Image (cartoon, rainbow, N blue to C red):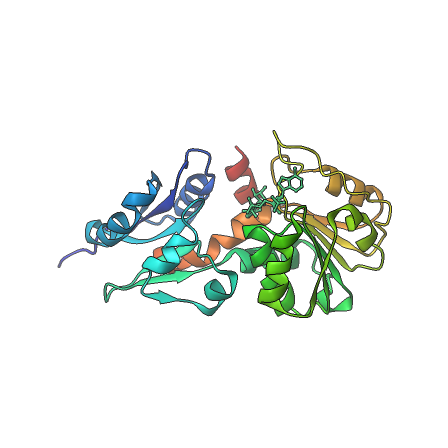
Length: 277
Ligand code: NAP
């Protein structure tokens, strides 16, 4: 009898040393007693295509993709999922047995699953969502919020032209507002999301006025270093439901892990601890 190869997967980016995904995958493989390896790979842009075409030959079943390759891999892939097309970027590549590379984006899925798990009473359809920021992560957040029935998205970004581009892509349920007025958008919202990098360790603080935060709102921040940002601290003090950004990182990894290693992993406190260690 010939044994199948031990599955290999990994994450491709540049730089990649900061990635927490290897710790997460190693934790799940240990927890479920699965054979396999998950490897961080720092790949330069000019070597990306050749690397992706070679990896299946040496036993890779897929890879996660991070900055700066999330858009470029869409051009290299042979098949692209609808949600990756909508978002314009891919974070998960599946190397199929027929040799074709399938690109998917699980960031929006991870964003919503994190909220569903940690704020089960959240009703996205009950009111507008405020989205601060219009970078790569915002695209996935907006796509998934619209998908779960948010009636209106109030979008604000320092560089307004980037927000206008998202409105063009997603249509009239997205309304764009000047960055200086972002604090005014919170009143009457059901959901508030920071997708900017403000508040992250080493970056500037998010200075948007937060006086309109009120009980019943769901407030979440994609920044997870630190876990409790100013936005989340003030939201908690105002009586909002608060969900930190680490869970999004964990949930977006679930579809890839299940596909590559054959078991759907659970996310609980031990998962968070393994990644934070
Ligand atoms: P990105 O494409 O570089 O976008 C950065 C965003 O932050 C833009 O909206 C940018 O506005 C805004 N910004 C940066 N500096 C600013 C400043 N001084 N004042 C006002 N706005 C500023 O990055 P991204 O990929 O969207 O990621 C954004 C954040 O989300 C990062 O902190 C990232 O770590 C986090 N993230 C977390 C997860 C998770 O799983 N939790 C997943 C993805 C991303 P301009 O357009 O005006 O530059």
